[in-house]
Length: 192
Image (cartoon, helix red, strand yellow):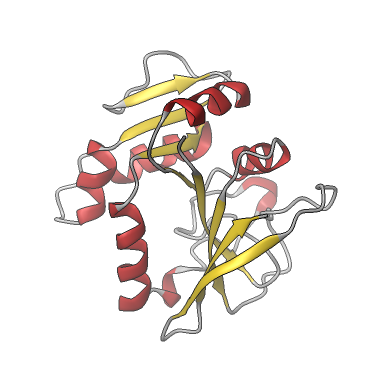
């Protein structure tokens, strides 16, 4: 059975919204997009690259899937993540997306029970990148096995958070932590 590994960039106050770009996700008037960029360094790239290399499949919510497709599909700048994202089997969970998905190697799943069935079928890890609403649903259904959180040393005070204020209690075991030169701590937690 595969494990679901959630990989997220978060701030100290738990915000995960729009780490990559100013225009990435402006819902609810969010104007702090791109907050993670200044913290990238070789340590982070090495750790994230190793995680991507070990990934057998990627699971997205619809919004993140569409954003990743727009940004990453077919890039020609030599970034190694492009080939990995294009070539890896992708699953997108959506009840509103039309079929077939446009990105090669993508399968549409209609709901969280379909993810549960997929997890039982696969014998390799499934990475979840971004996809906050999907992550919260997976956590609520007990489907997440590991969290890899890049905790950035800043507080934004506003924005969508990884854990909802009305979420169920959960405990995690720290399996590994890697500090970067920019103050980010990449913490890997296993769900207990």
